[in-house]
Length: 279
Image (cartoon, rainbow, N blue to C red; front, side, top):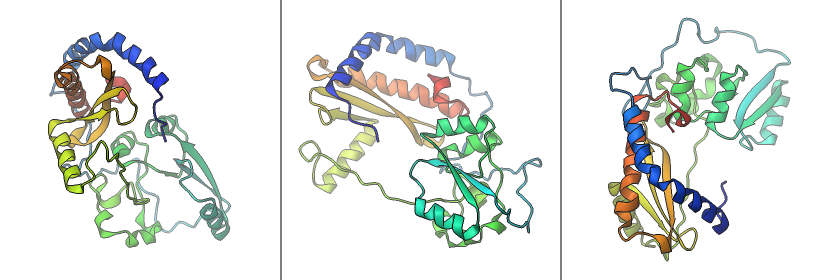
């Protein structure tokens, strides 16, 4: 988990920000000039408002029915670190007389880069946002459900996901909840008031960190959205409180929103681009 930014780290970054802030307008102008036209062909990208049933190419069919299990085989899993219990791995190896080999990655971009290099794995723990890149890139083989009998036990709400209709390439791995903590001296402790504040933030399109994480530091943040309006990234702009301008909304939030809008439009028009391509 990322560690909070120290005051020393922030001051160093603030100096870089101060040096680069005048280029924000030029950055927006360059993005607008270089943005692809709406006539450019785009890659299919699934979204809750655009569910996708991925095609199965003739040269990438599922494995045949009725094959015997490989004896003495090694099951190669590509996963985040510490996502599989060593006890579960050992029990599986003992029960099925096989070996499990686990390779790990830090994020999806790193994982997809390795997959594109030709390294082969049997199971990859992908985020649903990566499915279009994996399928369109020919990096996944369709599933033969006859080898996955326990798929019938999955909750009904997950049996035909919008990101992979008919479960052609994926099965759900886990479900979990996320807790949110907040400082009651900065955010309303009353749940109703908190929901109202969140709704206000969503409506205006940007959020504020007013010395909540680090004294003396004021931050604005806004989301970058992909196809279907789904947030895929974010940008945060920080300044020292004593250097804050008289109208911070106009000085920081407005150009921040413009920047996020331009990047979001580019992502929506050409979803095959990576963030490195865009920036």
